[in-house]
Length: 95
Image (cartoon, rainbow, N blue to C red):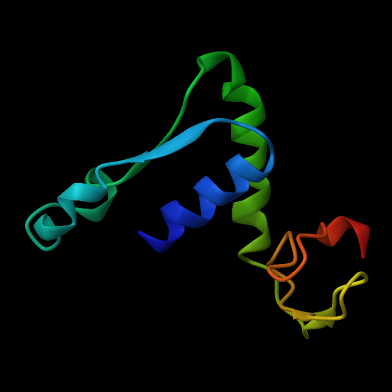
């Protein structure tokens, strides 16, 4: 559920309308494979290519290693895999 929520947050931050489907099935964990419980849906198939780019970029950042660095705007310490500051919303690309 956490991964789906993080992907949803990235899509929403990029201005795409999206939702998590299957969250109400969390009670079936153990009976059904997790990959069949949750999915993230975008509202318009016209945004598929942009959404795919966002998800691919998000997945790439989850592989990043390294020391935490301060946000350029608010100085909050951020792990390298975060694309946006949780405190002020500044993009990691801006740092």
